[in-house]
Image (cartoon, rainbow over all chains, first blue to last red; front, side, top):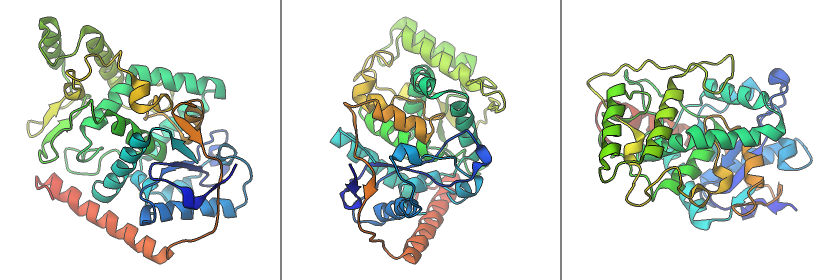
Amino acid sequence: MPVDIAQVEPGDLIFTYTGADLSMAGTPTGHVMIAGERDKLDVVTQIHQVRRSMQNDFPGTARERLIPNSAKSRESQPRASACCGAM
Amino acid sequence: MLRCNVEELRGRAAKLALRIERWFQLDFAEDRIAAATIFESKRDAGTVLTDLRKHFDETGKFRAIKYAARRNSFLCYPDEKGRHGNGMFCSMFVVLCYQIAGLEDYVKAAPHTDTLLRISDKKMRPKDFKQIEKDVVKGKPGSCDRTDFTGYHAYTEKLREDDPYQLGSVAENEPGKRRSKFEYRPSIDYWDFSKCPSIATANWAGIVTAGMMVDSKIVMPRGLYDSLVADGAGWTDMGDLTGKQDFEDLAFITQRAKELAAESEVRRQSWVRGRVV
């Protein structure tokens, strides 16, 4: 059952994929973020990322969206703590 | 999207994540995610979860205590030359936010004003262990029991192994050099034995939820997802996110991100120089 992004609460964990490069074939990684504050930059940024993955039209559950990460996509996340917010 | 069923824990974890994001940002750790990726890739779906739980019991809970003790300043200290610390990767950060949040009542926090104090178990020398063991034998108030001492000692031994997770190609071994400038303290000193007399028998599922009983250093998003979904009491799978696209201006977000990173860097440099900002 889908959940509307407006229902995201602080502390919710959002799983998504971050790339489709098979350079690390067989090693599914994906991405996980922790929601910060509602209606603040932190959540909005995360929703942007999740939304971006949805726009790529990967169907199925969050688990199925966990596909191999790419070196390039990891480079775009220079800070782990950015997982909770600003990128 | 997964939601923790323990509302208070969820709120604490979010607050901690935000504080780190705004005050003590971490670098992205390529080497650590590489090690975690290898760990997961060498196991099939059936054994990843079992092994994540096993490593939590052997090392992960001590690692969680260490980071909980560091929670008021940098989770990854700048190195002795003041350069950036190790950093983390996304699932490591998320897991630690929850583990630290759960441990706030059980682990004392090192004062963030002491910029020369390092909670570091890698730096413990044999004579440090002898001192801890003496306290165990004496039954000194506030010290750990024999079981926790043995578990903690085994954990620190693993920190010194070249390849503690049997990854084959990734080694981690930091020389145990000590510089007089810094004071190194073992993380076990920060466990509040007056509140919970045993680390080994603590109700970890109640403290961090069973789903978060994974070793943060080796858990990847997929393993974490499996672990949380398996913990129906602690976590709820809310389903896929959907809804109307309603973003703030991306340029503003990007600019704010740069500002936060710059502010954090200034704070780090000041801290390295012994000044708390």
